[in-house]
Image 1 (cartoon, rainbow, N blue to C red):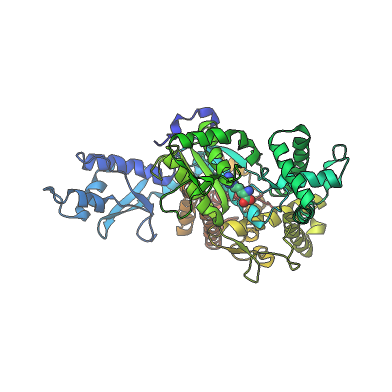
Image 2: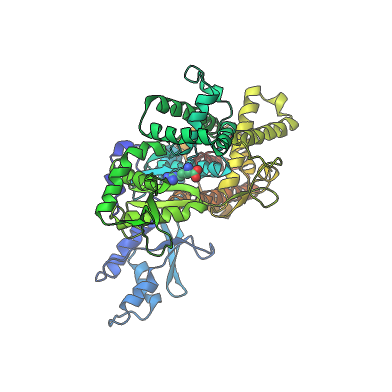
Length: 602
Ligand code: ARG
């Protein structure tokens, strides 16, 4: 059952102004009425509205005529084909301020041309009421976005960086759509490696309890050394294995050591999150551990768990190997934790959409976990029904050599260093353009951060997430082409146009008076208005690149407009400045949703 958004208490809304709904949605309302009036006997026809592929034919199209015709043609209808069906739909449209004209084309497509006065009014209203009134309406109330999720003591690698960037954007888009988002960091903080780490801590830093967490130093090196010891020293190995038992049994000393080790990792992760401006709430694997027996009981009671080669497993139709939920040694694993976490999110946290952001390599794992949850009746059979679980997979990060991204020394890349390099390169570029003398040190620093981190994020987000992407500083930091640098500069340029006009934009907003007389004004205006439906599409399909495409097209539309329509000093100055302002507002919201900090001057 789909949870209707309107049942959400109004207090969680980001705005007290009414959310107007996307153009598509508003058109759908009109066509719904017309379909009902023209075909009163046919039930359950939902208007199918899409953006026109070819803008010469119209702005939007309604695609119901064909399927309606197929429904009625055998039944002695008075209609003689899909075209007349389309015509009847047009004739029954209620009067509205929205539509200029409709026409049928091809096998009954209805092309819709919007009234430019209506487009102009909608933009004026947004400028006054705020862009929150353009938020999409989604059929969910509460989602869990499980993202970033690095592993304690192991490296946080570029895969985790992708997960962090993509997950944060999805969370932001959902939050903007007035959905409550639980931003979950499902860190790998449980497992057999901790026995080894704890024993090594006892050996290496005898006064570990008094020592600061920093005494461990580089945790990755610490991990490597302890692993080496584990592999080569049978006595140590035995102690490590006992330590796991003590830890899982909740023994105070072991618990404390574990906490300390986790804390070191956490601080390291935080340095990355702080740079990226990403906020997460940690509920690591260990959190679910006490719930696992109960969750497995539920699955067992449904007869889903079987014995196989000494392990306990769930067989999934179409999968060669079963999902192992209890290992041969009786221990739990990644799958037992994820099944339990899913149960917890559904039942304790009452989420209606669970979203998991990891590399595509884990697709199989999640397919099996979700399939098991369906077998158990935790999730509905139909993919499109809520509550729903979705795996958001992404491809690899490649280096210039086309191989998995690494630095020259074949050592893994430290994320913090990577981000810092993006920033310092930006700073250098700004200094080369003389900004060090023009700006304060703080301005220089902040701009370098905004552009540098923004560039890394945008380079990741602009491609379909399933494709591998090549990490290349020169490309992502170029001020030409589809890059964050180019877009941030485009935004700054708009701001400077407004500033240089010397006009008070807040006063202009009150006066209004947008007129979309020039075709490039109209094209820009229409594209602005399509913001809500693009965000909606990006949310529903979990594809941030759709928003990037939208933003890039917006900057192109703006450039065209600005090239062909004089703004400052023209007779149309006021209305065109408002269009500049609206573009800047929408661009800023796009940046915000992509986790990019806008800059106002260049
Ligand atoms: N820690 C895992 C890894 O680094 C990712 C966890 C993703 N989330 C989950 N619920 N399994 O690959």
